[in-house]
Length: 277
Image (cartoon, rainbow, N blue to C red):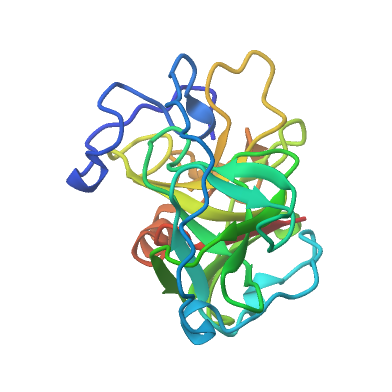
């Protein structure tokens, strides 16, 4: 993550739905960009829930410590991903009468890609899913009504170990590969938490963000003084390979180009990303 505003070039057709105006990504921008007006909070119409086997292999579990190491690397079943409808009510528990604690956005923060969210666990009746509310700090988790929502799964998850400056990619708990990475500087540390991929953005050769960036659902609460860009976190490449393995960024995670190419083929929208200290 660099101080220069990150400028998009050569976006593919798949990203044509994103803003046509010049924009910026990660901690590189968003300033002056008017966010779309969020629709009124809603819950999907009650529908007959699909079998639990189609939703998730895991019913609701006790809350877990997001700073604990190797939480998601031990995953032995595919992660459930749902296609979010804008304005979904997020409740404190899996109950229509539970307190509302927020709403889910319909799309990613700066690129307006339709949101695909990682469901951490599913209620016993299969109608509700626990999610982290995107782009909030401190992070907040709650429950959305998922019966009737489109869904996918992924066997891939990403673990970022800040203490080791290392990114590890696993498939159903088995390590596919691992790479050294650059992380946030001491004054702008990368915030730990559970996130998911919200954007997949290609860039031109020589970009300070490498050839590709993955926006994730987190924000940097400790922006550098005078920062003129946005606050969204990302995993991306770099044109400064000497920074790999060091704490130098404004909060994003930088990886070398070769691992970045592997990530590009593996990380779909909604892929879990767990960052721990």
